[in-house]
Length: 225
Image (tube, rainbow, N blue to C red; front, side):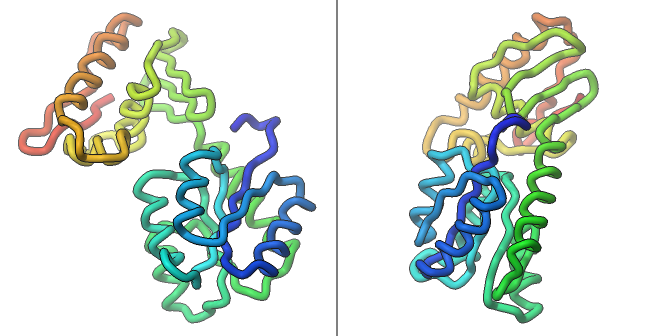
């Protein structure tokens, strides 16, 4: 999402009246809004729509709010604000531990909701640029630069590099990389090896002589910028 585009907010709420009220507040605040009445529908929308922020209710039938949050955090890093009628501390703690960025109680104040959404989106925009050593990854435009030289990568290669660059020094197993980037473990781990080999070739072509991917025996790879 570029800074001159309207942000897309997904409202996940099974109660129609509440869903319409939240969507109306956000639209009044200048956001594009899409809505989901179930966890399953919400997860499908996230895959398809390029959502920038999620407003999530916890009490939903079927796939509940905590499970939606857990599955979102396995695949996505957009801000998530829980908006719930559950006010006990234990619910807030569980939501934050599962990866929510904020927790707002119902009934909510419209100005406070807009302020929190705006604050989370501003922080997310700052985080859209990953800088690791002499490598810069623009997560909005999916561009990579070594010093000032552009690095040409496929979409898959960019996703692999971004995963490693987001956690320098962390060892990722091939299975975890497949889950995070491919979205499944039911493909050959050799795909990971091949994509890393190709990234190495592309980085070397622009002058990065050091191999930034280090084999982690018994695990997979880690990123050493």
